[in-house]
Every structure is written in C-alpha cells, then in structure tokens.
Length: 125
Image 1 (tube, rainbow, N blue to C red):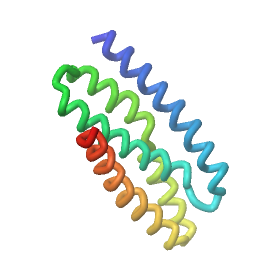
Image 2 (cartoon, helix red, strand yellow; image 1 turned 90 degrees about the horizontal axis):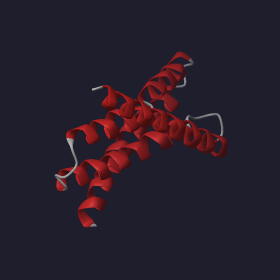
Image 3 (cartoon, helix red, strand yellow; image 1 turned 45 degrees about the vertical axis):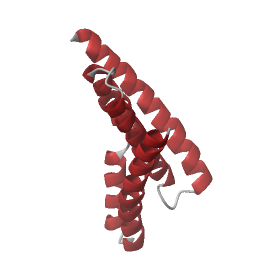
Image 4 (spheres, rainbow, N blue to C red; image 1 turned 90 degrees about the vertical axis):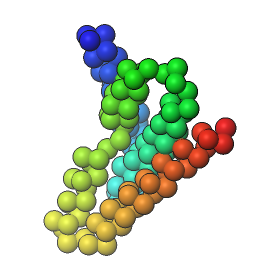
C-alpha cells in the first residue's frame, strides 16, 4: 500500500508540474482576459484521458493499480477543475456573463470532444 501511495504522489507531482508549465505557457500566449491556460490543460487532459482509457481497456495487461496511478495521480493533478470553477465564479462575481458562459460551454463541450477524439485515436491506431 505504501508503495502505491508513493507512486500516486510521484505521478501527482508530475501532473502538477505539467499543468503549471502548460497553463502558464498558454496563458502567456492567450492573454489575461480569459483563462486560456486552464482551458488548454482541461482539453488536453480530456484527450489524454480518452486515449489512455481506451488503450487500457484494449490491453488487459495493465493493472488496476497502474490505472489508479495514471488517472488519480497524474491526470487528477494535471486537470484543473477547481481552477475552472474559481475562474468561472470570478466571472460571475464580476458580472462578466459572456465570459462565464463561454468558459463553462468550452470546457465541457471541447472536453467531451477531446475525450472522444482520444478514444477514437487509440481505436484507430
């Protein structure tokens, strides 16, 4: 059990670092008016989740423990749902209704599309 927890923590640390670097990079390019970094991380995280979910389903050699390490450890730290909620809440607090709506719509619609695209890619390969 202790070994599994260490692996989850290490995967989480990697996910956190990847999130920080990618979100910061995208946010610097996109500008400060909209949370582009969070959007990019969430969409890429959904795509990776779709790829890995389908890959693991088609290859039974991967253990449940590895799936936990990847999905809870890495992806749990990489995706940024709490940041998404905080940013949307700030838009609502500031009465920026269009930004709030756009954030909710894009995160969810593009997230579902990215998950499906990841799953389709792995089925195709």
